[in-house]
Image 1 (cartoon, helix red, strand yellow):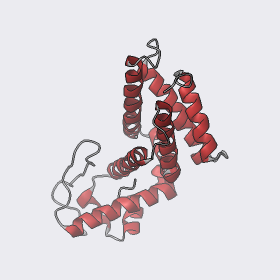
Image 2 (image 1 turned 120 degrees about the vertical axis):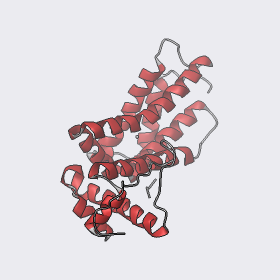
Image 3 (image 1 turned 180 degrees about the vertical axis):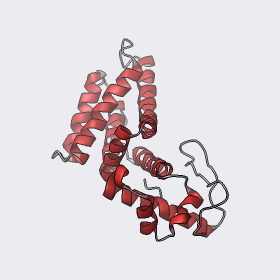
Image 4 (image 1 turned 45 degrees about the vertical axis):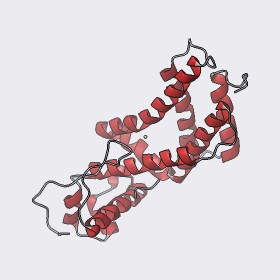
Length: 229
């Protein structure tokens, strides 16, 4: 599951170039000219706005090119399809989530403080990207390939949490009768679903009580709140 990611007018005769952010799989081919890079970035930014306003189903490539201020055919210089540019928007969104998670300051030195930081960073990033997160959930329901993208983006957070839980088990802080990956999935789903209900569906909550409650539940589930950690 990224801040914020970020010309001819006739269809190209060469294969469209594709960029995959380094945080995902390593750099791909960017346009060689500054103008090309600006145009490509403008298309991605415009696509996000269109997806947020119209949803994935109703968004059209024409809407994206009009919002970006470029000719319709220019789109195909950089992207093959609406689905491909949607993937780019998702990659940029995941980058934003990761940046927020890594940049949120620790409020202490213990493991519980690290859980608190992770939850706070995730909720802050979700709040900033709530409209797009709602669109991603919509798209994952109706499109199997986009569903796979959604699962892959979530896997980053599951792997990260599972690795921490396994390390805490090795240190004798968490019971070894718990499966780290199942724990990471279950507890991550709690945080993610809470964010969805709050920030997408509009259930009234506030950030600080949400962070405190989610952190308490997370740590109690792993029995971390009874230890000097």
